Image 1 (spheres, rainbow, N blue to C red):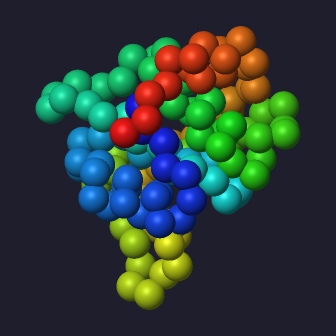
Image 2 (cartoon, rainbow, N blue to C red; image 1 turned 90 degrees about the vertical axis):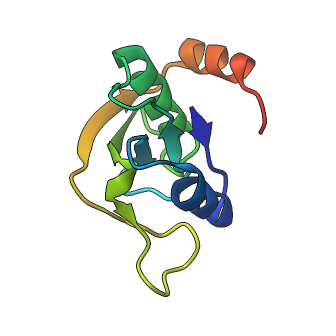
Image 3 (cartoon, one colour; image 1 turned 135 degrees about the vertical axis):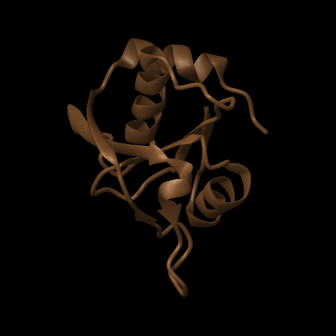
Amino acid sequence: ILVGRGGADNDHLTLKIARGRDVWLHARDWAGAHVIIQLNKGTEPDHDTLMDAALLAAHYSKGKENTFTDVRYTLAKHVKKPKGAPAGRVTVAGAKNIAVRQDPSRLERLMQARTAL
């Protein structure tokens, strides 16, 4: 799971690193991180990985203080940057929505496991 931090970082992650088959996530209606689940061809993320990534998208958003945060997700190939849009701004097609409840113990596990690129 890769997490962008800031507009330029989000652009780089979503538009340069992510492959079309990867899963892209972002907190719905909030400014925040783009999150990518990297996948091998023909695979899908398991439920726990999807929930981990969604929790990270919620945590690294302006909506992180909410008990629940809606996170949208889609394949990276459905995420496009409009011409002239500011850093981090994208359009998304075919997104699904998942409601994420803040889970401090799960978040702590994820933070302990993180590594920087």
